[in-house]
Length: 214
Image (tube, one colour):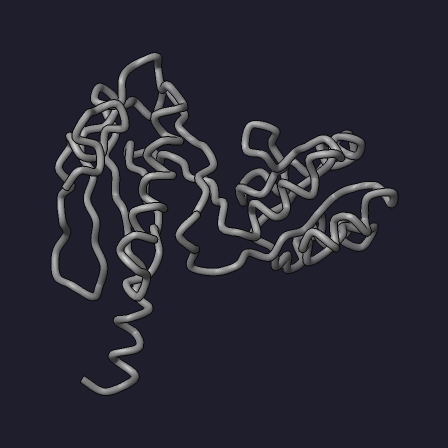
């Protein structure tokens, strides 16, 4: 195997595919999961806030502070090269006008997702997303797809990211049902190996005594 091919395998994403026992037409499943074991990339964050909190946002790691031109670019359809948009509550009345543009891209700040926050939570929110926090959501086929990391990650790091996601999903209390009632199956895959690996259900249910035992 040449170096280029070896590098591509080492950098291959480890993918999780979860089939839900939930009707996507009746129930929306979405949340934020942290990546304590590391993430695939550091996202670019755009912050909508008032001048009083601009310095705080930049010091926390924001890549861009929205200004008048940012609003013009978004409404005109110009390139918007940011993966996360965070807004403070004091400017949300203005940001709401961008809903028709940011919403379809999954970028509209939302308090349930930690992207619409009070000014005192702004620093925490920015640092969390820069550290790898990411939204997950169930699609129309009742599937959740996400990347746990890369094949080059240590096993324990991948397990920490898996644990973070599973606990957040369990915490959502979907339809007031148990984890076992809402999840049908979970598979892991990567182009570094053929096929997919089905995880033993008892070991991925946070409420089960066998959780993460083998």
